Length: 115
Image (cartoon, rainbow, N blue to C red):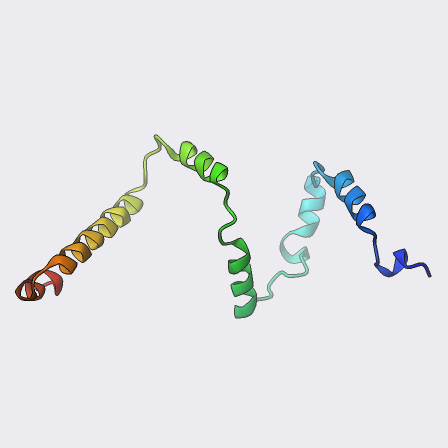
């Protein structure tokens, strides 16, 4: 048995395979066969370690160009009421935190403890 058939694929062959597959799309039939109960991972819970690894792998991978495009796409769109409320609550908490930081000792009881 040759080395190539044992899974030792040269870097050149990997590059050629990668180039050959770029731009290809799965057909609707192929997508259907891979989804839901047909998927080998269907119904299997992820371990906490796996979730942590996925989280670490996806952090910080958004380029500045992508961030700009996302920002442009959202401009002019109305936010839902729940998002607006969350934003206002966040701003209020930040404002209160700054007030508490700058407050004198006697002010702390009134403004910072919510009394």
